[in-house]
Image (tube, rainbow, N blue to C red; front, side, top):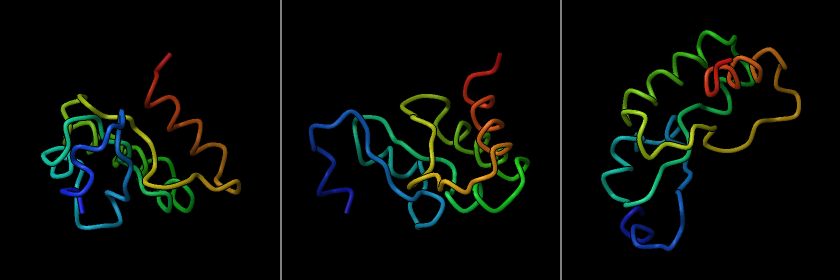
Length: 95
């Protein structure tokens, strides 16, 4: 349904790029603004930091670090391990 929101006046569009058939790269070809996503809410919640960091790297590669608001396709659950959230934070803004 990207064709329905391609001209919507928003700074970015968020969708479940890891859990649907539309990757960040493909989604960006439909919209003019930025994409928000790159990490599955389930990966950051249920798996170790290594798998989540692999998704971060893939998202950055797909977008060339342009027009990307790195986040989850949905929410980060309150029971997400703190070590995963910290690793995600460091991947986004090292130092």
